[in-house]
Image (cartoon, rainbow, N blue to C red):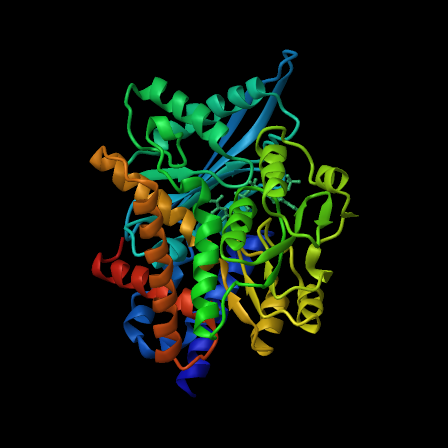
Length: 452
Ligand code: NDP
């Protein structure tokens, strides 16, 4: 039998084991499948990884925590949510990865995100392991005091499992500066220690400049490198962006700075189409709408007299660049075909796993430049890593210095992926490039550290 076939049988066996051991966790299965497919050529060349059962070990989290989060609403009513923290892999550094507060959260979502985080963090070149956490709590429609009471209760359990050398959570969907603040305050009170146990902190109390912008900016820095590799850039390009949260907001700002035009934004109620472009006072409006008033994107259409498409996603709009920045599986095979038929040039994943396997297959087989999430949105965690460094040094770097470090990290990610693509002769396949580059680093660290 050919080595290729033997390796394929092995990865299929591992996949079946994962499915049986983690029943119903479909997002986790999806994330595992993509990585297993990508690393098959590596296993063919590195029998030492097979012998040491690196893959069987890497798909099993080091530790999974689930806990009760009781809290009281403003009327005295009592609610109970479930909290999660999955500490997936710490071979190259303390567990690092965000907390998501969203009603769709369950163990399978946290595991998929934690698994992806291992390779993403490795790609940044910084010493960070992979983890993820969150809760099925929905912050939408809650008052500030309700969110505070929830965050305090959540941290009252999480605090015993994290630490600046152990596990350093950050934000994600539903967890921004407000939530990080409440959780940090509770941690400080419980431990009587001011340490960098969360990233995404406020500027005046240990936060890093550029962290709010980092994921969106990083996405555009990476795509800019990829476009330059094709002899083009953002100038004059039309972009369709989904979501209207942290990642989308700063991706839009950076595209505007580079001379592109963004014509869509969305939330879970639908998308707006503004052919004039979301820039200047229109971008300012989005920032206030989403971060201060916490309103719906539909209000943008009312304010500026453009179209709002209820319960629809923006992938039918003709564009050069498509940037899914909302959530997982928000761009499917049919959406991909529509984008391709409309002449899309490049797709960059700001969100985690926003494209379904069918969509990725369509982009790759049609030679569309495709920046996978692990690489494309790594700027957020990279800047979290820079925040950790500043906290340890008890120093604070300027905006320019931090932004330059972020840009450098994104350029290096592009280079690592490109080198892998060349080594394994997979032209244009940045999915494999990102998965293999991240996997190699963690696998080698696990080999070096023995059977733990
Ligand atoms: P936010 O909570 O700031 O914004 C999320 C946006 O996505 C909102 O517009 C939200 O709309 C929309 N959205 C969420 N769920 C759905 C859904 N099921 N259907 C349609 N729209 C939805 O989150 P972020 O911008 O921080 O995160 C967006 C994505 O980027 C996530 O996948 C996250 O994991 C990923 N990411 C974020 C990083 C960061 O630094 N923030 C780092 C790396 C990845 P609505 O308000 O209606 O819910």
